[in-house]
Length: 201
Image (cartoon, rainbow, N blue to C red; front, side):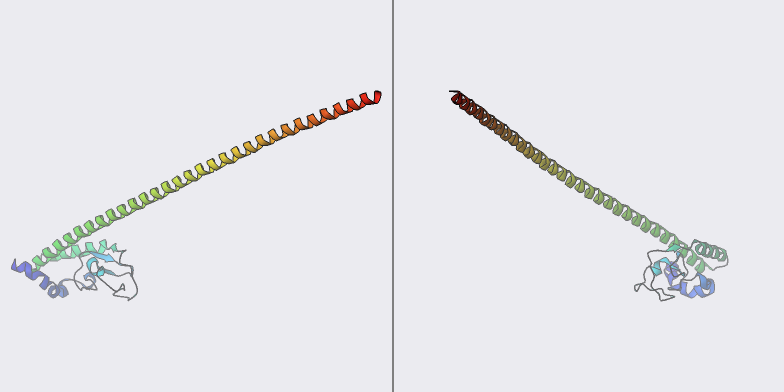
């Protein structure tokens, strides 16, 4: 246990003689166990690059987006092979260091996988919520459309009924006007007949 407690303290001391420069994170200067390529083109330890607060590249000082990180699997494999090759020549303390790093790498990979799964589940929940929101919106639009159609049909029916009523009134008035004209005509005929009779007398 005492040796394992000393391992993190031994890492900076052993790195200069064990680890080539390109295997070190530019931020922490520690061996990378989960190297990722950032959009500035440089490779960092995932945990370190995710902790930057100012949103600037540590190498170029230009703005970067740390939400898009590409695992540098080639470099990770090279580092792992390097460590494995060196294992046979290391002292007991150094072997503990390697085992510690391997465990750390395994734990970080598992944590990264867990975080990725959580992000994936969050994204699925977000998409599901968006889909339900869209369905509710469409259903509401359909309800409004149906309501407007019913209102239109009722209004149209009212207009038709009103037009039919006006037409009936016009027909009735036309019939009454026709009868009145017939009566006038009949009266004229009777008057003319009466005049003719009086003339003959």
